[in-house]
Image 1 (cartoon, rainbow, N blue to C red):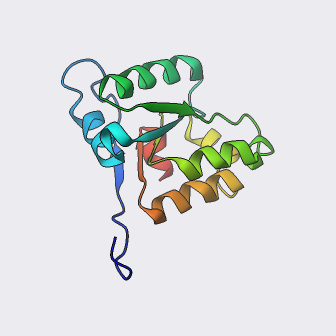
Image 2: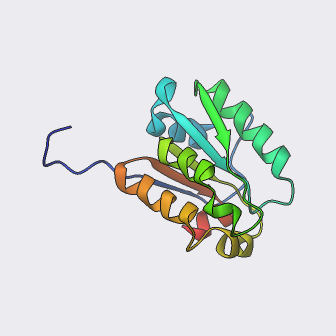
Length: 139
């Protein structure tokens, strides 16, 4: 990237109920924006009451679309949102995907924490940030 150029910044705001089985058009675009076969995607299922299922579904879809590395960050307390390990995952991500569920959980557990700041830094450096339903609202 030239010295004075700004990184390309992308937000992918998804209303909800995106296709995870058929053509997966929106999720395919997310993986492409995150770097395709060079992407490193982090799923944040914190808003969902079914976090493990959310992680499994999105990990499967993103892997099928060519993402070689999919991990998750799911803090259950504000203290966990200060975890250097979780912050580092976001700092290394080329794409961050925030799932749907209860938006209040996201605002209580992530906003204003080191993890929340890491998401903002990721956007500033050019990682694509995506979210569906509550994940879209919190953006």
